[in-house]
Image 1 (spheres, rainbow, N blue to C red):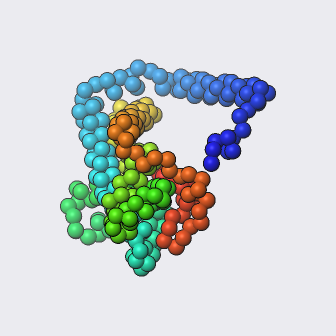
Image 2: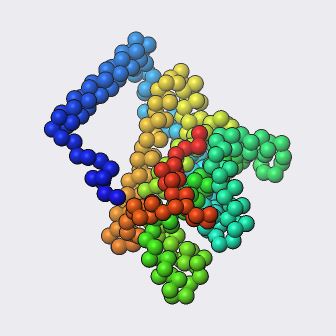
Image 3: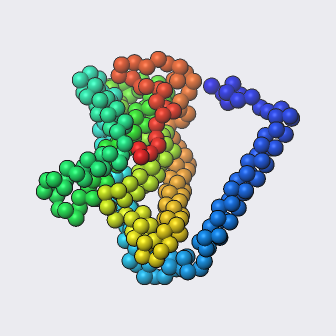
Length: 305
């Protein structure tokens, strides 16, 4: 479906109206920022003493770097385990074996609906009542478990919809050379779907990194806990500490986005993309029992909260 069908090019009057709305929006945003600046200035929030702690090495060595390490450790573990589990779930979700497909469907729908924070709290409570793991590792395990259960379900749907959006000739080519449907999915369709859905996968990786901050609730010593709560309480600059943590997360996620863009550009230069996906012909097809829920294309991703 072409963009011209979805969106009519604005005429001269519409363009003028859009410019006026844009200018009014910018003025409104500047007014809000000025109001925030004034309120903070009235409460002496811009004093140098409240910001200079972030320039000291002891602050970074004691709070920022340890918290950053724990955030990246939880996010890295969750990303790797979620991707592996999501691949297995996606294969089961697209399996020709109906009971397996139904069981995986129940798993995915359940954990995609339950908030990440609830799964973290339940896991932390369960681990605290049983001595399966060392006590000092329980917050990390609970944080990673919550992230994995939710995001593996979401990533499973991303991969499944990526496979369904590929040109039908990809599957037919695999079958024509003697591969079984399972082998075709595993060796041809899923690798191409991962490349085609890379922007969505990167968005979900960013969500995982941000949601690692939910470990704050179960006392996991990540960046928000260390550089936000503990450092802010020590220096009496809670607001500045949380602003600093927000900037740190923006820098981290911006770095992830740029790395992903570089990887995607490299794949395109090597001609490893799967071509156009999500064409109108595919989107117009009705869902089947084992096939894709194409409407979910617009509902994937996002944080679990």
